[in-house]
Length: 321
Ligand SMILES: C[S@@+](CC[C@H](N)C(=O)[O-])C[C@H]1O[C@@H](n2cnc3c(N)ncnc32)[C@H](O)[C@@H]1O
Image 1 (cartoon, rainbow, N blue to C red):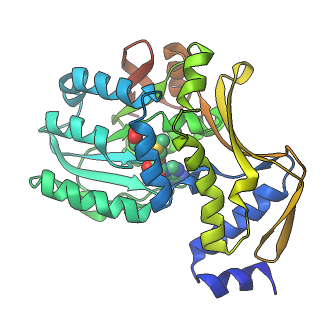
Image 2: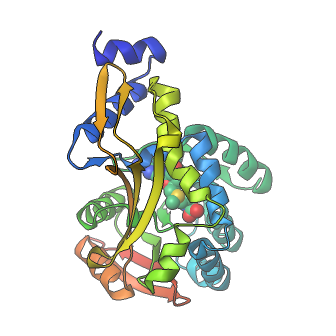
């Protein structure tokens, strides 16, 4: 039976076919990798929300503090009657702070790949912000996202918190920023949250929490492959590894095979050596200046950057040509 047939027998969607193809390509590569966007099914999004509340995970607390303090200044940059597009909205916790301060926003467009989680959150947003038009979009922001037709006539502003930009390789981050510029349009303001380089022990603890929630989040990727593609990963035979790669200014997350083993996915068998890892995510860390240089090279003019020393929130403006 071909890979495609095996996958269709389980759940006949184009997304599942693409998921299977990406998983098999990543696990057949040397070294093995999996794209981090697949962390986020309903279970993965809920685990990420738990991570944001962990004592060791400073980025969310820091960014919430910065947004609380500077929400009026951020809101003052948005044009009247605008649509605010958030890329990778998750639970929209940070957008809520900005939306409360920004009377100029008429429509909020949370964009996320985690469709079920996004729809649940949209229902809560409609209840909490009855005066706002809420238009959730289930989409992959590594491709060109079409904003909803209902917002076509409105000026646009963008929001990309959570240092999700750090999950891209720097050249991919530049590509994303250029694409976001085309989506948001000339003169648009883009608010981007970016984690800062800092002492490696603080970074290490943030991705190796004592409760093991980050390990569960990482391992959920294998559980998801089992659930959706009928694979037979033994979750007990893989462990979470996260460490700071100082040369590349990034935290790397891996899943390490604790023994020599074979895993069956669709009609493909993947061999693992003892200790071999699957590279599941990078979280690049920037300085204020290095991020501003990246944004500038991608067509954005830095307007402002707010920081508490651990995390930064940038305001950028797209050139009017
Ligand atoms: C690091 S979390 C940040 C969530 C939230 N913005 C925050 O700041 O807490 C990344 C979010 O981006 C979404 N995401 C990841 N890759 C994506 C992709 N390629 N396209 C769309 N959404 C994606 C995830 O589902 C998740 O909600």
